[in-house]
Each structure stands twice: as C-alpha cells, then as structure tokens.
Length: 541
Image (cartoon, rainbow, N blue to C red; front, side, top):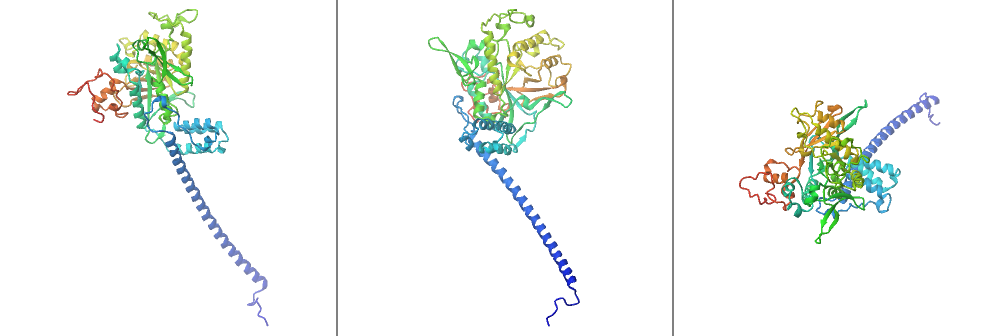
C-alpha cells in the first residue's frame, strides 16, 4: 500500500495552512530583498545623475572658456581704426538663426551681465531651447555666473580721469600753452597704452552707480546704498571720467585738439578735427582723436573690459558750450527776451561778445550726440558752469557767496536741458565743498547741490590709490563721494622720477606709457639729485 502523504496525524487542511504560512514568509522575505535592491538602485541612479550633472557643468565651463578664448582677444596693439567685433562661431549663428539676438546676448555675457543675457534671449526668443546656439549660450551663462565672486570692498575702487587728449603733439607742444598742456593733458599714445596695461592687469570699467546707488526702501523713502559687484576672480573694478570735454575756445586757438564730437554715418560717436592744408584751406577730418571714440573702440574689441556696458562719465562746464558746440545763451546767444527767459541771467555781471547765429541748431546737434553716447554706456556730470573753484566762493565764515548759487543755477538752466537728469558733480580744480570728515546737514553748499538733484560728489586726490566715502542719511537720502587720480603728464612723470612714492604702480608701468615726445622735464615735478632731467630711465630700471 502506498504511503499516505498526509501522515503523522496531519489533516489535509492543516497541511495546506502550514504551506500557506511558509509561502507568505517566503514572499515577505522576497519583498524585503526587492525593496533593498530598489533602494540600492535608486541611490546608484542618484549618484549617476549628480556625477553627470557635475561633469556637464565642468564641460560647460570648459566650453565657455574655450569660446571666450576664441572671441575675446588678449591685449592687442591694433589701432582703433582696425578694430572689429569678434566673430561668433556657433552652429545656430552659422545657420543664420537669431543671429542678432545671439550676438547681442553674447556681448552682454562677455560684459559679465549673464542674467541680462539670459533674460534678453528669453524675451526675444521664447522658444530658444529649440535653437542650439541660443540654448548653448544660456547654459554657458548659467555656468559662468557660478564662477563670479563679489568684489571685496567698494571703498577700495580707484577712479582715474583725463582731460581732452592731445591729438597733434607737434602743434600742442609748440603752442602758447605748451606748459599747461604738458602738465595736465594726456596724449593719445599714452591713453591707449594705459588702457592696454590696465586691461592686461584685469581692470574692468564700472559706473559710480554700480558701486553705490539710491534705493527705494520698503517705507517708500530713498537711501544711498552700497551695491554688490560680481566679477570673475582676479578682476578689479575701476571708474573713469573725463573733465572739460567742451573743446574750449582756447584749444581751438592753439590747435592740437579735436574740435567737437559728432555722430557719423554708422551711428558711432567720433571726433571732428579742423586740419589746415598747405594752401591755407581748412578741412574737417573725422576719427578717433579723443577719449570717447578711443574707449568705445577698445571696449568693442575687448567687451570684458566693461562691467554691464559701463564706459565713463563726462564732466561738462557750460560757458563755452558742450562737446564742441557753442550752446550757452550767456556766452553766444542774443539774449532776445522774445526767445528766451532772461530771468535767470539778471545776475550776470557782464556779457561775452561771442555770437553764434547757429546756436539753436548747435543745441539740437549736441543733444543728438549726447543721446548716442548715453546709449553706448556713457554718463554725464556737472563740472560747474564756469569751472568754478568751490574754495573761492565762500565768505570769511565759510558760507557760500552769491556766485556759488548763480553758477549752479546757470548750469541747471543751460547744460542740464541738453543732457537730461544728472546726479553727479565733479568739482573743478579738484576742490570740494567739505572736509574729509564728511558732509553734514549744516553744510549749505551740500544741501543746495542736493536740492538740485546731485547725489555723487567727486574731488581729486592722487595721494592714495582709492578714497571713497558715503552716507545713507546726510541731506535726507545720503551721498557718495570719491577721490580721483589725474593720469596726466605731470603725474606720470612724477611716478617715473619718484618710483618710491608708488603712486601709479597699481595701474601700469609709468615708463611703458610715458610719451617720449613730451618736452622734458615736465613742469611741477621735483627732479632727484643726480638725475638728468632731459632724459628718461631705460624701461625696466
């Protein structure tokens, strides 16, 4: 007889129940193993994703750097006339897709405005993900932005300035104002060399408003507030300004300088210069003969020399007009009561005899030039109407005299309408309206200038590399104040004669930039004992 498989007194139901329990236990063990396996797989997948993302970021950064090496040239001695915009080489651009958008955004990115570049692309081409070139540029912007670092201290930002550049040395250095020009002016070769040296050292142009600006608070009030500046490691922000860009009458009389700024057929601001031919006739030549077109050309060649498109600030007087145009009613107008409101001129003690029959046309042309400059990153400042020395318009008690108010009102009446709103004043003669301790609410000059809308105040101080002061409350909303360094013949020559003073070594090598065509010695510089003032040390000494 066959052995009963349900032996040992175990019933069929009991055996089935025992098998079911064992099966359930096996299934529970199997589920636990599967859960552990799934967890391991999830962890491994996460590690792969993170690693892949990190690898992608590194590749994007490397690709961006390689792209920059292709499109941002290193320091070049190419003349401004030969400068052209760097070409772009992405597939999308080669195929002609959104070329203008790509080029504009690329330039913004090269000026460290990565957020602006991405926003511009998103606005102009909402479906940019389908464009390989734009998508790649957005990815590069996001990767490059991660490498930016905040500038360590906004009070340690230097501010350099120039006057109109000497365009023809043979004329300027043989004129009745040779001493003055040799002292306070800079030549075109010197300016170009300074820009190239500073670019090579990692300097980047910023505006005063990039350092500190008026912000609206939650309660609606305004307050001057320091701003963060984000640049790649190794870059150094600096401010640039130009004084007296009016091409004064005396400069026209002596010659050697441009005569005015104009907008050429391509929409660029260039200089116009009168050149006397051999037969005595005068021709008008256009070119890059001063700071504005030279710096524009340099930044076009080197976009990474400019932070978010910043250029410089132009400080203008009013008595000879602006930018080479004779726009002053006081100096050049007929003062016809049927044409102008003469109330503002009642305090004018005398009148000039220069009459400009084209004064209205000159004003309109000047405004056209101003708008073109502003669109290209330039800002403007008051240099007072009559190049006024703030130290000489106070009485014995230190209170402002009538001339201070009169001059300030004339600038507002004659120059501001040509420029639009201006909140920067750059003091003539390097003077100031207060001591180094800061402006206070009992300083009547400061309060009057604040009333006129000025928030930025700049003097001259070449004794130190940087000097910045600001207040969040003085005058109600505060101010920003900065010392400037005059990069002219006298200071550069002084740096050569007295290297121990260390006044320019942070910017450039003075011997490398000094123009050998300057008459020596440059006036106002003490010559060390035993040094021949008619010669210069060899470069590198």
